[in-house]
Length: 102
Image (cartoon, rainbow, N blue to C red; front, top):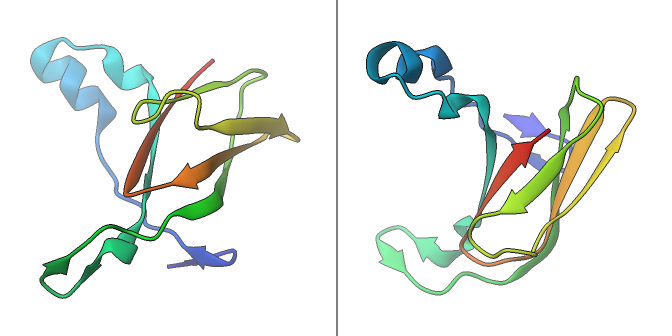
């Protein structure tokens, strides 16, 4: 679906399922994935174009946030303003997985 100057995809899931079925409480951690789709065409795959300053802004109902890029530690910036959290990946290769903690 259109979202700002790009597109957004929402993948619904049931976070309590992990706790109910397996007893894991790690579903409390929020995760945002950045995916660079420039590295393929049809069934051909190649190195993706390096993208700069890719950002997403999400509603955030908490007073603090700390973001960590699991793929490339340190390659993330974030800002919290007016109950919105903006996460920026300065250099995006194929993928970035950002964990958000309070």
